[in-house]
Length: 193
Image 1 (spheres, rainbow, N blue to C red):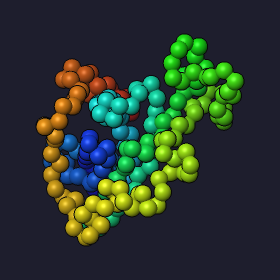
Image 2 (cartoon, rainbow, N blue to C red):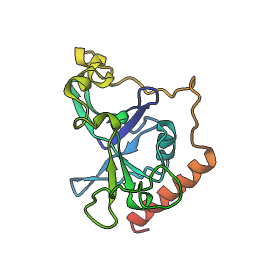
Image 3 (cartoon, rainbow, N blue to C red):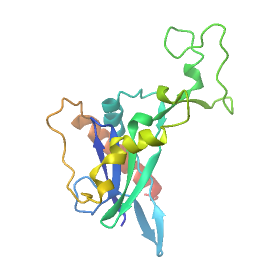
């Protein structure tokens, strides 16, 4: 199926990506077919990333990487991402600035190792300092590992509902309009229009 839907739980900080139908309001085109071959599509995040960054308290000057897990059941498949475990990619320019800030180099400390001159430094969650990644048992006890689907009770087809009882800063209409126009222009340039 060429369409997906992304669902974000702002309290548990979990992101789910599941297959969707075209008539679902928040669907995105994941792939297309050309000459009988499936071709992946580039999905621009400019329309939804500012909202996600705001919800998670992430710095817009940095990039983030999150490893997802694939879950499959008879009723469907989905990718789940625990956003608590995001790796932060800090541009080296933030590590060498001389103005006061939390990303400058302290006297007597050496610069972190990077593979190249303009490479980013990867910062891991503090909980990982005595190991690597979330421990096996911690992962099993997390909400991703203990949801109802582990008992064979999947609700993968349930309709995603927007949260209205939370005080959340969402992207305003003007920004949405501007970012959608950018996406349209990107798509037109990709298609040679």
